Length: 546
Image (cartoon, rainbow, N blue to C red; front, side, top):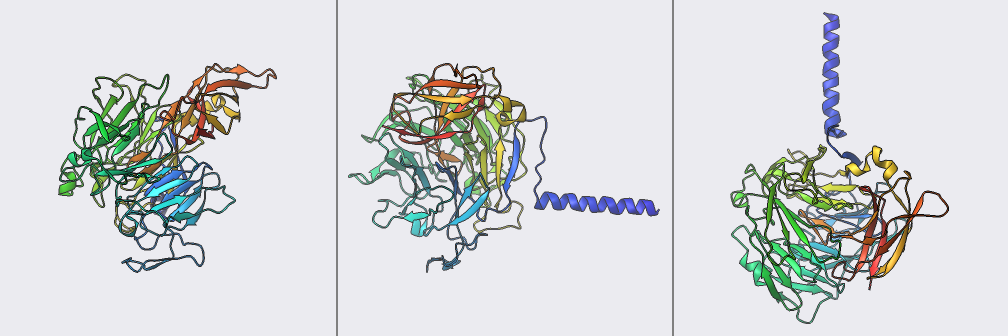
C-alpha cells in the first residue's frame, strides 16, 4: 500500500511539473516526422509586436499601440510620454516599441510618442524605416527610425514639419522605383498619397471605394510593384493593375473566388520571386474568413483554405485555385531565400479583430511554387504558442523566421484562453537542419553596393567540396503587420557557374548581374543570400543603387 501511495504521489508531482512546465517554460512539442524546428528566443519581449521590421544591421524593430496602458517594459529612466487625452495612462513611462538584437537576444526600449495602432511602414533607400499613420493623435503622423549598430543608440523621430494629407488607419505602403513611397488606402481613405509629398497631395482611387462592403474588407490592401512599374492592387476579392503615375486603372483582373481576403477577412498575399528576364510576375493570395463572420462577431465560423495564383503580367490572366491543408485566417506569408513561401501563424475559425477568432492554426505550411497543383503545400512541424490577432513573421538574415506578437484583446490580458503574447520565437525551415549543414555556403567576399545592370562577383566557401550551380537571391526587408508584409520582394539574379578559386581552399567565385532596373528591385538595402542545393547562406546586406 505504501509503495502504491508513493507511486501515486510521484505521478501527481510529475503531472503538476509537466503542466507547470508547459504553461511557464513553453517547451515546444515537436513532430519528428515533420520538417522545421522551433526555438524560444525571448520569454518576455516586454511588448506584443503588432508591427515588425528587420533593419539593415540585423536588429528588429517591434512596435505596438501606445494607448493600451502599461506594457511589461519600462522606458529609460526619466523618459515618459505625456498625453492628456490618453484614457488609460496620461503619464506613460512604459515602452510600446523595442529594438531586438537576434545575435544576442537583447531587448532595449524605444520611445514612440503617438498612437501607431494599425499603421503602415516601409524602408526608404537609405535604410530608414518610414512609419505612417495610426489612430487618434497618430492618424496623420509620419515617423522615422534611422537604424544603427547594436553598440550605438538610435530611436524614433516623429516629424514635426510634415504630416500626411489624409488620416491613414489600416493603409499599405510600397516603395517605388524612384525611391519614394506610395501610401494607399485606409479606413475612410479611398485614396493615395506619397512620401516625400508630391504636388498633387491626395489622389482619389475609386477602386478602393468600389470594393468596400458593409464589413469593409478593403483595408490593408495587398500591393505589389510589378516589373513593368505598375502596381498590382488587391482588395476584398478583386484586383487591378494600376498606373500610379497617371492615376489610371490599366486593367481589371478576374475576381478571386472564395469571398473577401483583406482586413478584416484576413487572408495574406505574396508576389513570387522575380527571375529570368524579370518580365513575369505571379501573385498568390491564400486563406481568409467567411463573409459575414466579422458582422456577426462569429468566433467559430470556419476559415477557408483556398489559394489563388495569377500571372499578373499575362495578357489573359486567370486565377489558378488550390486548397491548403488547413483553413486559415491571419496567416503570415514569408518569402524564403530559396523562392518558397512559408505560411505561418493565424487561426482556423472566426475573423480578424479583438476577441473574434478561435482554434489557432499551429501548423506552418511550405508553399513550393515550382511544384504542380496538388503538390505545392507541405505541412511543417507545429509550434506550441497560439499566434492570433496582431502577430507577425519576418525573415532574418540567417534564414530563420522571427515570430512575434499576438494580442487578441483591446488591452494586454494574460489570464484568457489566448493571452497577450510577449514571447519571441524563431522557426527554422528544413534547409537549416543539421544534415544539410555541410551544404551551407558562407559568403566570404561581396560588394556593399551594386548598381543596376552591372556585373559583380561574390566569393563563397562550402564545407562540402561537391557543389552545383549556386543562386544569389536578394530579399527585401518588409514591414510586417496584419497578415501582410508591405514591400516584401525576392529577386533571383542571373549568375554564372561557381568557379573554384586557384588556392584550392574550398572557395568559389560566382559572377552575378545586378537587377536590370528599379522596377525590378527598388533602391534600398537587401539581404543577399547565396543558395547551394536549396540551402541558403547567412545573408550579407547589400545596397542596390542607381
